[in-house]
Length: 195
Picture (cartoon, one colour):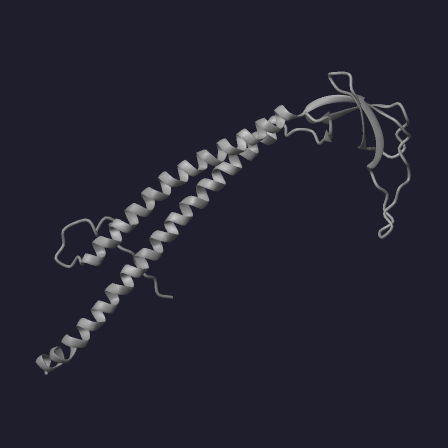
């Protein structure tokens, strides 16, 4: 298996060299700009994405409050899935609760099968008195913020780097085409001079 060696000095395109072509300098600038834009843009988008997710998590926490609800009926027991004949571990049953203003609300909540009427449940409600799921915990909220920020930053950086790669390939393709045209003009003369 044949190994290909890369240039040992990655900054060779920046040094003055009589063999350095204009396309080499353009490739170096494209590479530098792509990395700079990727790092700056990725950082900015990552921070904005993390802040947006943090705001969403905080809004959700602020909009939900705990309520003590009482089961209005005994929850059905022994409910089974008709297709697989497996038992359900949660069923829906009627509950009632009073909000901070003393207004009585009714709804349905998920409880264990066979839970007795009058059982007190700790549930969550929104500002309109509707039952909702529990808010995201601090740990889960932090994890979502970190993952959102890191994902947005990585994706943005990859987009800039991919754009830089496409631009570099285009410059390289144009340079190769120019070399082909020059060879078509000089190649036949070079062969005669050697003969």
